[in-house]
Length: 617
Image (cartoon, rainbow, N blue to C red):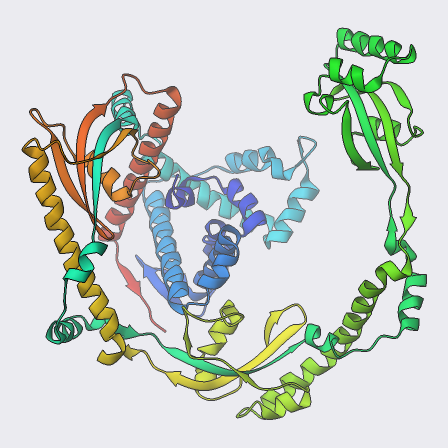
């Protein structure tokens, strides 16, 4: 189901678990049932307020959900205030839809009994220990979510009541077998085609654009030449990494650290293992393994028997060799045996979940401590960084304080931390260089404080890496000058004219093919699917739009990014019966589409009949 369907239809308990994982919007959207009051309303639905508090909490939970879903991409998106404003508006619309459903359920007399709520709570696995309801766990989870038992039960009652209405509306939706079958067969259809691309590049040398055409295009399309808001910044960056280069560490200090931390430079024992494996856990497998072991006792060669009898085919090719292993890597039974053998020895038959093994130790790499000379450079780097981090913590406070106390310059802040004031070229929100494209830094760069000439707050670049920025130059968004975009316009118009010539050539070829000209070389493709790779998507789309001609060839042309293509449809390949998997996928998709349409229609109907007032603060 799509998100809207899930919001309305899934159970309250499922929402509780989802909150624990990703703090989803859905559960928080019913905060009005928790007895909270608010000072102001953002909307009123049939006389019932949606409070500012309720919206803000739901908005925060929606942001948490998107962060969980999108990861670092959400950090980038959230730097755009317009994106967040759109998310918040969507959240408000969901709250309104939810309130309308609650009111409709109440008007229809739908209700959920105390017994149903208690049963749902007791049967929810999240509240169980060893399959049995556990009251202590139940209360602990409610406390974590910020609920009291009474408010939680009322929240459940509201959502379960709403679910009755939603399930009645969309739960009865169905897809006809014939409908799904025909659509599945249509989607599985393939086509045999021939094609010929007419590239526009060769025509570029044949076209010219006048100054008058360039100016007319510029004047007629001002929206295409808007300059985004741009800034260049001055900044002071302070990082432990840069401070580390200035630190001094004596050989004596490095030696002392080595002597105190030798365990950090100790390599663990490794063993080169080989085995003969007989898979299976039955008596026959065990008997076969024991027979191989007897052959080894009688002097047979381990590697030869491994190649001959081991059912681990990959290691068998190498005489049973598995590779080097540290303790704790293999299955416990295998691991214990491997590290109990001497070099060159083989084991008795050992049983694991994989079957019966005979294990041999081919070689042993004993544990050893790296010498001071081997690790000296690493120790020196570590000690330098440790000193740098300590210095960094002191300097970052000085940077923050000075840039705040002297807000109209970064010179003083740079001096106090021994850094230099650096600067950037002009950039927009979409073209920011590293590290200024980081969401928090980008947001600060275009904030009202920085644009008004103030130093920013201290911004985190990375671990033990901070900066303060201030405005160097600002260019407001607006129409770019004609001279700035003249070359771009010329390129566009030339491409358009070249495309027109390519189109004319393609139409000429179509006419010749329809007249039976067989001298035109075409590129053949058989059994092309709707998702074919290696063929321009525009050609594929055109091929599946075309109908097979009753007489003669079915021919058409289609525009490409640069040029045109001639497409000849030779054959439509239908399938007689769709597979069970194809039918199931089509049914699920259609059911989701129908359910979403039903849900949207109900919400639209309720909105049309409702009195909804939006309040602006």
